[in-house]
Amino acid sequence: MTSVDMERESLSQLARAIQARLVGRLIGRTYVRSTSVHLGAGSEPDDSLVVEVVLSDPSGDTWPLDDVRAIYRVVSEVVVETAGGNQPVYIRVSPETETPQDGEEGQLPL
Amino acid sequence: MAHPIRPEWLIRQADLLARQGTTRPVNQDLRRAASSSYYALFHGIALTVADELLSRSTLERKWEFTRRIEHRVVLNVCTWVLGGRSPSPASRLRMILDPLKTSEDLIELAEYFRVLYDARNLADYDHAAHFSRPGVLSLIQQAQGGLDALRRLASSADLQAFSVLIVCGERN
Image (cartoon, rainbow over all chains, first blue to last red; front, side, top):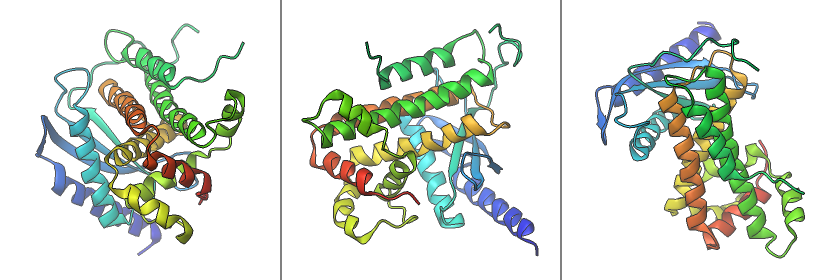
């Protein structure tokens, strides 16, 4: 097995573990709809672990802070248990309904 | 006339960027909002540490001192407060660190800092990163939550110990 295969395997193991702990759960007033894991690039030489968490749409502008904190805590625990927690981890929360973007990138008047 | 960096103005800037437009702002504006949220909390911590440790110094000297505070060291200290062991704190720091692991306000501050640190990295460096308005508004809320936690910690023994760790912690 190559290191790339091992990395892929550990990513999918982490993805499964996060999914098992969160998907379908109601945390406070927020449902976790889906989760996924991939690598992202940060300023550090090592890639960041990006955990995407899709939540039920917030009733206001965003989700209650306590709900988001609780979700982050679960993800952090799973990352430490599964991946050892040595890598930077970014947990990105997004709503299940994505609103369309205003205008096109690069067409803003400067 | 000096126009210092004010954390609450960075929050305001982030909020304006994230709320503009009728639907979702362009990703570039959401990136800047995520980054400003991080810097609001980072500068809030740096200024508080300077106030705590150099309380009798001039404002200019405190600003100069904040420039020596390293982002990665603040991250390491926050990771230690949350019970993370990597990188390990030097044994001489453990007696200062251990009581902080039960400070609710510091735990809250450390959680927000860690989230914002990683979010800022992606916002500023990852070309593929995509941000949603509610997600960025949550980051802004967390930066504000961190600044509120700092205010609650003002003049406490926990804040003093946290400040010493930031100065004595090593970059790994």
